[in-house]
Length: 81
Image (cartoon, rainbow, N blue to C red; front, side, top):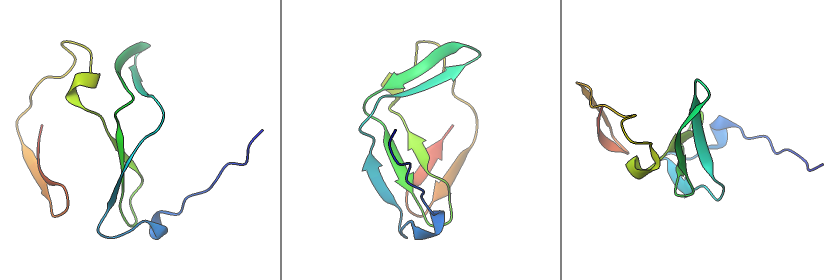
């Protein structure tokens, strides 16, 4: 059994660090896999929990639907929903 490392969100950098994820990332919703990829990224930003970003191609057909609205982050830019 390996030792589990503990991360402290206050140790994350500012501006945020983007790092590739070396393992497969899978999203399961109501027992169904809706996304899976080995091309995910993790964003580490001071005082925030890690956020995982998956490419659109990781999602199953007909799972994502456009929604109204957008937001802006000084580091990541504009997000469309």
